[in-house]
Length: 77
Image (tube, rainbow, N blue to C red):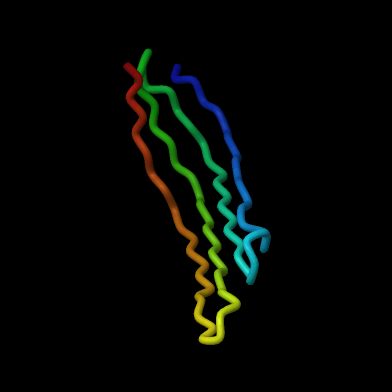
């Protein structure tokens, strides 16, 4: 019977420390199934958020959010 595990991880960066508005956030929640001694398959839901603006005279920037499923195969050697 294959080993089964759940996982969650995330990170936040930027936080406006460099001047202007800058923020990035990433989150991932999923399940992992061990197929053998060195192989596993995972399925996860991921969200990514980027919000960047500068403080120059000509203000530029962007605000992006992406979400979706992620399928992965991990081989350890």
